Length: 251
Image: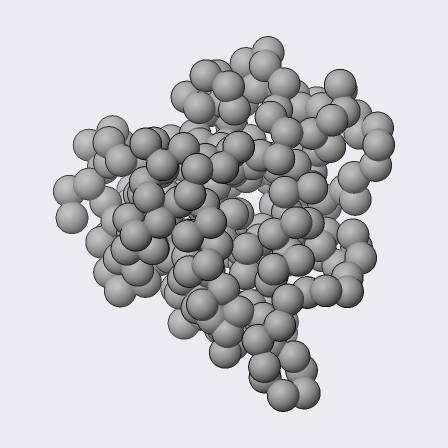
């Protein structure tokens, strides 16, 4: 399964305009384990999870909320580290990370808002006006049950929307959701090359399955705006082979 490699020293219309229906923020903030009452201020191609013994693809059928939270924190760190390390190779100016508000409970009346609208249930998003990413913990937990690559996919995708918001509009594709998938592929494979992320047998199929799921019509994604399964897998693959520059509108 995908996991962080430890190195020494080393929504509604408003939410739609803010990015898509699943996004991120400030990597210095530890993601809270959600409860029934959370107070808040305000999707890529791999093989599938493996057992430590035999390397046989399996689902995460026994895990705790703490396991999911740790995976989220690791994914945030991996994605932010990639962008902070490589930003100057692709763009001018200084890289700034979006804020990470992190987990909310989609049924909590006091959940995050974006532009005054409450975050959607079973959703993840990037909020443009307030420059943050957040996700319903239930969405992350349900995806994690199928494998941890889901969490990396969601976070890399939503971070991609934050990156789009930091670029000249000439570099941002009209198909912004597919471009975010492309950037996710570039980041996750780029992090693997950097040695900050370990890609194991099963991860490719696992992310492909995640992209296929996101390409279907679900409560949080619409194929008309996000692309169908084939388009999403293809976009992620483009980022894998072409890197960040291969994802830009002018590339």
